[in-house]
Length: 376
Ligand SMILES: Nc1ncnc2c1ncn2[C@@H]1O[C@H](COP(=O)(O)OP(=O)(O)OP(=O)(O)O)[C@@H](O)[C@H]1O
Ligand SMILES: [Mg+2]
Image 1 (cartoon, helix red, strand yellow):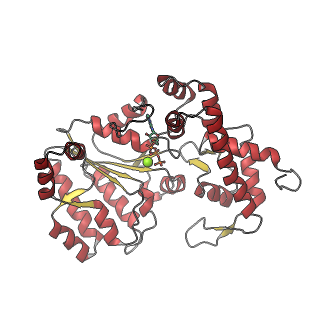
Image 2 (cartoon, rainbow, N blue to C red; image 1 turned 90 degrees about the vertical axis):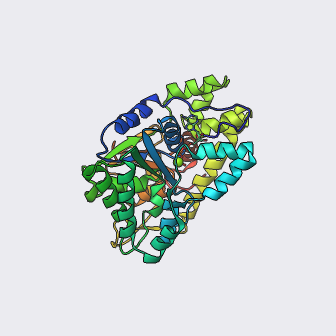
Image 3 (tube, rainbow, N blue to C red; image 1 turned 180 degrees about the vertical axis):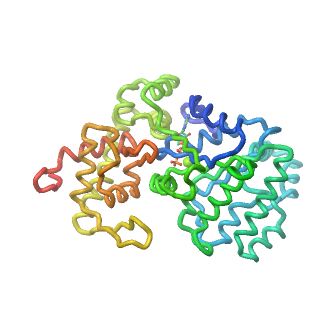
């Protein structure tokens, strides 16, 4: 996103034509569904959506992009504060006066989309005082209605899982989903996109009865081999085959390879060692503790069994993606929570989050004694 930063290579946004077209098709139609954008970690979900927003005609769409990443939202006030941005006109005018080039640029950038719903300070204070999410949603409905007289509002919430378990007189997420359904399916007022790289959250959403028939899912996966090759070739990367063999097509990892400018063998060794450590530490801990997993809310917790974890990992010995059905549930949830597994509820498959973790797992599997299940 930041095109001013100079790295060894100045890496530009690459490809994603198919996915962009899919999202543009949605934006051209009447808002009708809640759109969930999901995919493995570092696959480029945020980059894609922010790049797409940049290209949207500003006279036609009013985009609100709210990123919950890193936000510690524990109560109602925290939620309200991330939704809204108090208008700070005086400050922006001052900055322009100063004519500071960078600040000006930041303002131009801020004009691309709004990173919160702008309101007056007393209004925000009012919301914080009443402590009612109903008031907030009522206000927002009016707000989007007003905007829709001139432009098509687009509401994007990145890292939605952050508020997945937040309780405000009951689960906030259900109220939010109801509000999204109102904006889309009922009023056809505003496009809604929710992004998440938490595949457990997406699986929960996918199976949520209240969302049945009201959602649309868009997978932003790592690049396929062909595109990964083209991406690396664009920057004249030498060991393309080796890079793809170990790193797969994950944009985040390929980008590190390009930027670090180190010799590929040393990067590969370093990264594999890091992931091996992660996996062997996890297996080691499981010799001593049995974490418990809550599969359904309020139901009895199920302990994670080390041998079943190994059994799942072994399924990836010579496969990249396996069918979800029949996989031991508590262990699947455990491995997903550790960001080792990625669940695709649409395809009903699971795979390892990244090529480099897969490589680490395969190396460790070679060292596991089949009888004792200890690492040799
Ligand atoms: N199409 C692309 N072209 C070039 N670089 C990309 C592209 N997509 C992603 N990247 C790079 O990959 C890295 C990860 O991207 P991004 O943060 O968008 O992924 P994400 O899927 O949103 O990650 P997370 O799962 O953490 O939310 C970033 O450094 C980004 O610049
Ligand atoms: Mg992201």
